[in-house]
Image 1 (tube, rainbow, N blue to C red):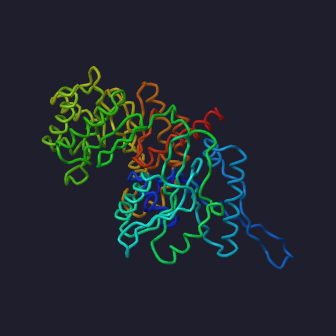
Image 2: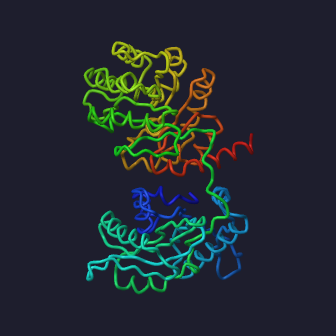
Image 3: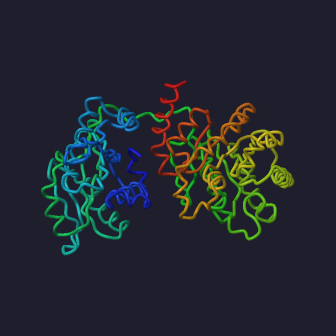
Length: 468
């Protein structure tokens, strides 16, 4: 792993990153004005032998070449000389760290900002019961001062503890001023004193943009796995709504209608509930055993299509274990008025090895699209439960999954059936490059990943074109 967008950081990254970066990511995901940026991980350390007769047998040195993936990501925004200067600056920071404390070296954030016209800090002063704004450079309009005053209280409430927030004001175009938070530290008297001496020039925190942000168009579609809070990310190409995430019938209808209205020209796929808490069976078999739940799910889809005339809504069958089970559920859906005709498309989730081994049978049975769940598939192939800690020992092993996908994807392509791939395993660099080379139709990601994943796909598409 060479870098991660700050907006995509999660609590599980805590062991590799400082807490302040996790907090910045949390605020970013909640919609606060955090500057766009990356967290760049330190280069590998390597051992080099001195020689048999030397008093020291080996020395430690940096792998100083910038990683290819990182270079391609930075090249979307920066000129070659800017990238070189930035990388040398980062190496200097890590070398300074190494002289004081050899391991572990810390990941460094950089932010893409343009034309800084003001900067300073803001925090809520507990004694004065008011916010304290220190401006080090430039001037702030009354509107920005008011915005900062309101922001500091809201951000403190989200993070539970009080912080000092370092801000900048950028002006990418004449007449436009954007307030951005780029750093935070816990509110202590020591940190207040330190913040007054904080100098951006001596830290890797800001990088001027030489061109506009990268365009998001890619050959592969990005589908959003709609979260519980029904947030819509406008940069995606479609939405998948997992029924089990939304238990109330009215909320299911609202989610479908909201997504279909937001993306009138894109597919909205409602995946029937995969209730893992069913005592008898989960997935499609669980829906067969519980016809009352299946009926309600079908009603939600038919209401949005027939009553609201939202014809971009499709339906997906979840977690099918066998060809016979798929046929039986298709018959149940037909009895409820859901048939593959006109614009109503039926998708199938492939989550167990049987699905891919017998993909030809499913194609003969008839369906309109495949959703390959890599997380479930990987767990079955390597023999662990997806939520068990032992999965960390297998999550980087992908060869069995790729071998199983190879022939299945070829058969689906020959039948002209579009393929969506879901699961965090799709974010794995090796797997993503494989999927791009194989020409899958789209990839399903969560809200945080949706905001940056186009860049990852562009890098993979460039690599695929190079070796085509």
